[in-house]
Length: 495
Image 1 (tube, rainbow, N blue to C red):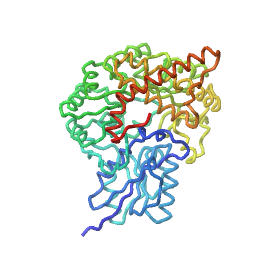
Image 2: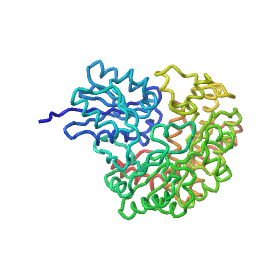
Image 3: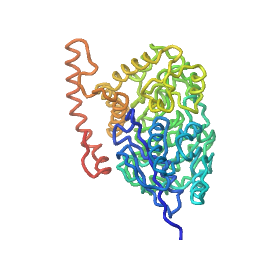
Image 4: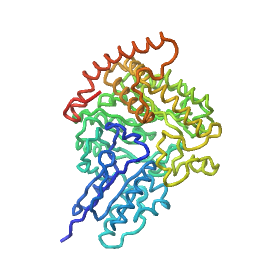
């Protein structure tokens, strides 16, 4: 009789900065660990600890397996040391282990690089036979054979269910390590299999975690439409968000069915508003479409009641200080609804990491301890035109100007005008509030006078505007957003 063994899965939390775990709505389930759980034989008991929700305590196990991004890798190393001291076998997988295997192997008994499906079954078999190896290479696997995520392990009150419909990306953006991890070819799951997994999800909010939900392959539009139509036909009622490139707006039928199936917001990698900045990181699709296409694309998406969350990068190769302010002004004046304004961060495995490392420009390079500062809200390097301290202080000023309550509310009302949807408008506003908490951690953005200065009349108009919009927001929240909160938690939420 095969004896029961125990696998403990751990999602570590960065202790230097809260980042996305600053709010319960942005504490995302680690999908990779759900796949590992699904690949684990049934005679193994699987337990799960997420430090985003629960304080760490040492738990008994036969194997303790971690996943980590670069920003929480140092925390994974700290926790692994405790288990190794207790004589429990430790394993690390995920993007950081895949990009920095020679570092990670010093802190774990075993590391897994690449995708779990190609490595985990063999690792478990070797452990049971007493011959487990130091390294396993999962490689690029057949996504059609990927198991459904084992969702019962996700016992915490996550706001979103996560589903992945494809892997891989051929785009050569120099700040991104996706193609290094998942390959440069789009690998797509079968639509019927995706719909079957969607029917296993229980939360009203859904995040399709594909790096590009509608890819560049021939027939990609038709596949996406079949997915969205299938959700409607099966009665899969979700409010969903995802990530897409500019081609998401090419097909009106696709946009219609995206909205019909519950799309409220789409993240798009805009990155910058000037060609040279896009050239800095080889954002080739945006260059090909042209920055003049942005407004037209946003307008098409808005027509279908969907908000645009734009990722914007500051501190690019050609950026001068005045370019940072110009990018901020572009965000303020454009019809972008929500905005993720990050500092260029040289993640290991990317082209920019190797370039800046060779140029000796990475200032925070005391690895592995400094990895905890690679969370995109802290400057880590000197750019050719801006030193690290000036970059950080300038970004702090820009974040205050973009993420104060008045600025975010003006964006919300513009979204309402553009999309004619109260739900979409509030969704965009809530998203900006999350980024405000993330980028201005430790700063009181609730001060109604922040960052207003100048004449008494200007301050009076500001206070009047804030009082009026307080009432409007309360009405929108009560009429629309509380329905989602009640679905999620069964109790009224807090504004």
